[in-house]
Image (cartoon, rainbow, N blue to C red; front, side):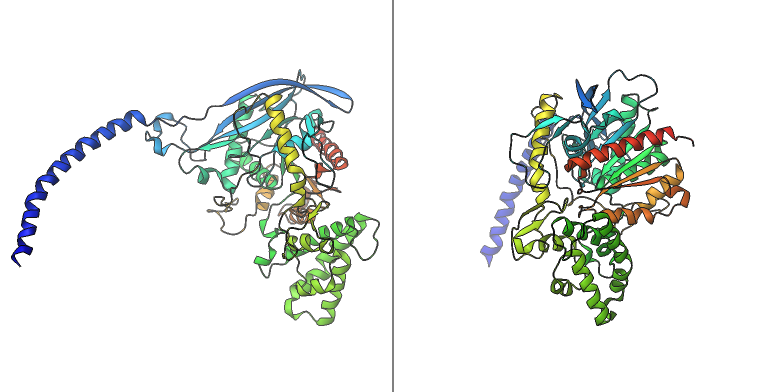
Length: 541
């Protein structure tokens, strides 16, 4: 036992001096490290606005229009950002979040007289750049793609865009934070910009800076949003009117989604809420018509669609509401009607309990041919990945045209706009692991925890500015945001009857990206140009 006691004593004798020496060494080395960190840790660089100017010409309706193009970036910050530099945290680790937002603007050269209209364009996602509207719809150059099939690989044809909207308005194509050449930096940067309200504030900041930089405060102003870009447009109209005192003349909405509880893809995760099945049905019928899958010949698409809309909101709605209490004979009649309108087998419809979501329809409509139907544009088809899968495993339309758009723009932006050398253009990014769908609606003290719904924002914006005009554009073959969903949302806005007259509707025999079908591209150009002209000429009436 003595040895057990003696050994600790010796250890104490030996360890104490070593501890003292180590403490002194640690203090000296740590001070050296601190000094080193002061000299070696570089301060993170702040983003700086950029601009590259070029000139060009586009021919529209046989007339050449010269333009000045500006490719550049503006720096935006979250809503609570303190713009006084002296108040910034000196610790580089706590650098405030900021975003560098990329844009390309086209201004008609030598414009004289009253200020020209200006329109801000953006696609959606969320997580998408605006390459699609830029290179496929309204920029001065357009990439040519196959109408309803896979576009062959490069080289791609880029042509003068005779359907550019530069004849009616100056154009600004804007990439959301993190997409395209837009970038994020700073502490908690994703949290600061990836969310419904955060994204809207960033775009509002961009627009305010753009109006100031280019002196466009007194120009008629428009927002053109596609897909989630329609959600963003509505939020921007409300936000800029009520918080930043900037009114807009009009909103041009393409492939609208304002209420995400109406989403076509996953209604089965929300049992008891059947309205998405009803709103999908007219698109199912249009798609079956296009692919010749209807049991009976129906020559007129519009007549068919109107008939299916009536069925969806009446007999079909009552059947879904009845649930398990629906009598067998009535259930059989509904199954037969759904078979007539969708082309799907009656046994499949019965097994699906009268409820088929978008992915299931895409997988099964052409299943006997081993084909999957498109989502963004149901005119497109592609080989099925897994014949035994329940739903579509991919979108044939996206696969068919994405390479052409992205390749063409990467070539164009560097060679003609002289921007982006040495940088990656991110056409699409993954944001959903950060994205907050919570939204603080007008009059609410906090963000509502349910599905995003900005219908109240649009209603409030239209009441706040009774002159605000809205143009809804939708494709019959869009199964990402079905056309009848947009109609339903507009018809259920809580606004007076007089304000409903401010809303126009235009429909196209195309899909989500209606401009992917050239005849529809011409039509949407003409409709948008007429809408802009009319909303300016009727000002104050």
